[in-house]
Image (cartoon, rainbow, N blue to C red; front, top):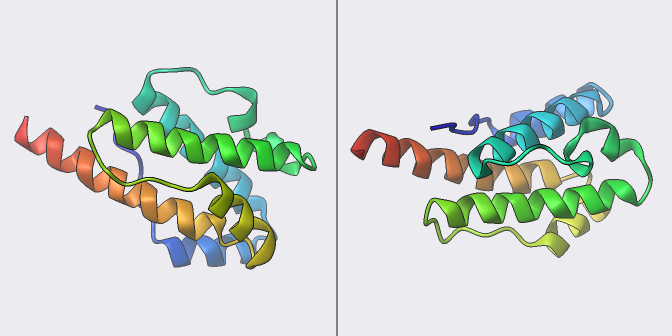
Length: 120
């Protein structure tokens, strides 16, 4: 079972700021790779790091990532969901807080999958 990596949302947010967004691209590519492994599908173009540096396409990719988080949660029976609009809203309005928002939900996915792998 491919369990996504758990990471502190605030630490992630600070790393993205300190590295002037470079770590955001690394995180984005890693998260999409892990989510696609959970879902058993290849990583699409909007899940690659470079999609986040293209204006407007980055928001499309961010929305698709939110949908991948939802699909991964649904695939393991978790009721946790992510709002696509909320991801976009936080990305633009509140100091790139989409990382904290999404990472918290990915941490929940990690916990659910880890619990299920122990009980199986």
